[in-house]
Length: 303
Image (tube, rainbow, N blue to C red; front, side, top):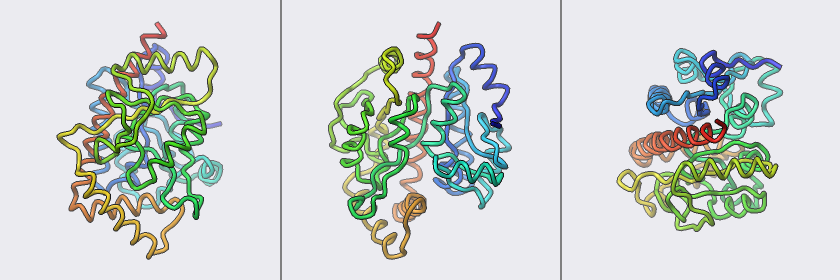
């Protein structure tokens, strides 16, 4: 099994320093160039300012790479042949020595293999709208149920069916925590109106919750819902209307499977004149701040 872990990440893990994992799908499929590269490097810088080591994860020529260099991130942002890779795609992408961008699910897999406990992303995948017809449900949810990583996000991507996703997470036994909020974050907006059971007010409480899961051998990760700051939140009603327009266009263009999310995100950016892209950047930076502090708190529990 070949995995390339940067020396910086190896040293940090060896010396019990906090590390935060980052995905690469947001670089290759989530934003246009050069915003994607700028954002990825900005997120890494944010994490470093907390005294934490960032580890951006991607697949380069079939080799899972944990702790991508600035040059590799730049290459990811420019290339148009980078595949979106979830769990089912890994054997093909690796055996064919292709470039692959890790989704939430695959980032969790490699973070766990490396011994990284905290992962920061924008929003997770979930149950797609009309899933009762299409059966389109992201493998991110199954991964959360089986892989022991804390995932810090701004909720479920707003283009999805949030209510059904919460129900499915409950069925899978995934603990969902709201950071300083008792309602689910709504990605572009800070409040979906959907209640979540447990509110945590400090990074230390979240780290302790993960520690308890491990002590009692409860498999799976924790999902931390961290709302975008109110002053940067977009109007929920307006965003729902825009997302519905994008969904209609996706259906008209027969977009399905793993192409749906990138198509919808791109269309929403277009329909909001770039406002959704700015909100996407704001929320991932906000998540990076929280994820860094959770990683520090978790590391302190191990000392």
